[in-house]
Image (cartoon, rainbow, N blue to C red; front, side, top):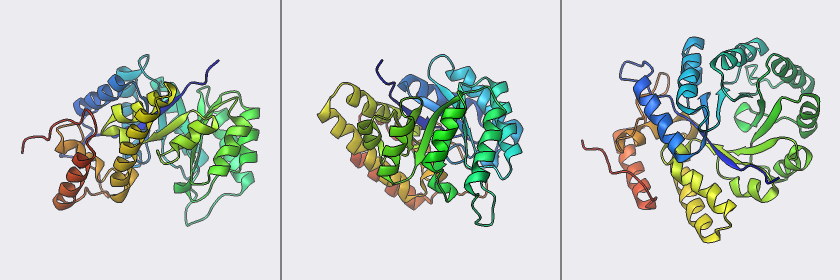
Length: 307
């Protein structure tokens, strides 16, 4: 059986000018992602600003995502880095109530610059995995300040049949290759961000994820399509434009959405505002971002909104 390849867009959460969840804009945004055929992570720590939402708001976001996406494209809950195992357990239970297709278990962040020991990591992941019947996805991301040892990833995959995937968010290609070699025949392996997308695909993994697709979901989907159809010229074109968009995205905070939301608004797309403490980029910075994006000449780029 051929391996299922996919790109996962980590969706924004639009807020109105009073800081409330803009449900109409959120639904419109999810439909854009659905129509592009991409998989979706909702209620994430970065792109979705999940850390700024109450538990009730996070669950509401997931319910809207399920209503708009389930049965059409895969919809999973991402959540944010907890301080306590009980916080991740509570998030997984809310994800179950929302009836998403799966959920990521974010790395625990115990504060004060302290990182957990391997045994503490194993205890945390075991507690979280055993609390849910959902398919779960292990996260090993540099944003947490540490990575899960490959031996631990392999033990968890062997021990728990509901572990469905691993997301690796680091620059170490040999480590990525080792994860795919050890568990890639049993679970999905994606890289966080598009930088290592071609490495993942070339090594036999399943694809990549990131926030860039919030602006142009058709572009990130075209990378996977070109790979599947062996369209090398199309792959060069699509991936080159994606990396251009990623460079712009990274220049202004990447997963913080400080530039992404204003960019969406500038092109008449549902972006909305941000919640404190985050602040959007300045109007002058937005002008630079818009000019840089237009210079990429991405197919399907919408016209600028009228001012």
